[in-house]
Image (tube, rainbow, N blue to C red; front, side):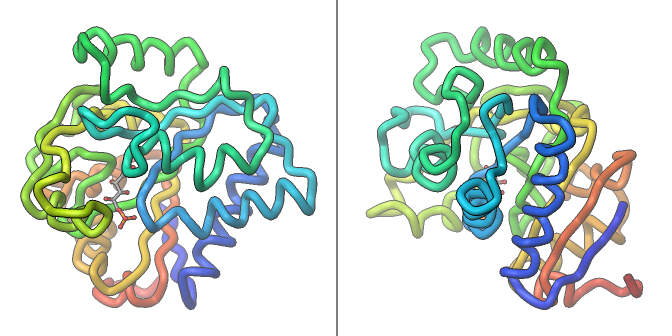
Length: 245
Ligand code: F6R
């Protein structure tokens, strides 16, 4: 696991964007795994800038998103579909036929999850998966206690995650109770992982992820087992790390 500690959010985002851009230039038809949330927003902004100013070409890129709330239609302004189009896809030349985001409105959820896994495999697997991390150590919506071998499925959101995400909804009750999420095993199958974190609230989860024992109670700790994982954190998120990096 490679750990980079950056001065701030902006530096974290730019470094992450360089890694993504390098892959897109080297392999124009690569498969990228995307995350939502506040953490990758700076990265997406920088990718948009690179597309406009440096001609970074996404036309052949295939994308898979980590997760989506169950019950929110794609046009709902808190759905992860909406988030991705609003914050990235509408501003780059991605081909909409190559974009995949779990369908929170799927009628047959199990069949959808199976189809999503197959689709990732048929695309040749994910070349680079971008991850944020929850303060409780979740990756995607794999909450503490999730099987470290899990595949795409429906998960119940914990109270802490619903509270953390309540800031985006009008009332806390509106936060969905369930989400579709790639499993920990699905994420670990990606050829490369890029985990980002910023801010003091992530410091404990980052210390567990980089230096703690591997445990399903901190799902992100499994990233220690990945052959090609890079963690980029700002100083605040790195503040509880004990080793020198
Ligand atoms: C979202 C996702 C989540 C977030 C995590 C951190 O697609 O996979 O695991 O990465 O909840 O969220 P932020 O970045 O808002 O702190």
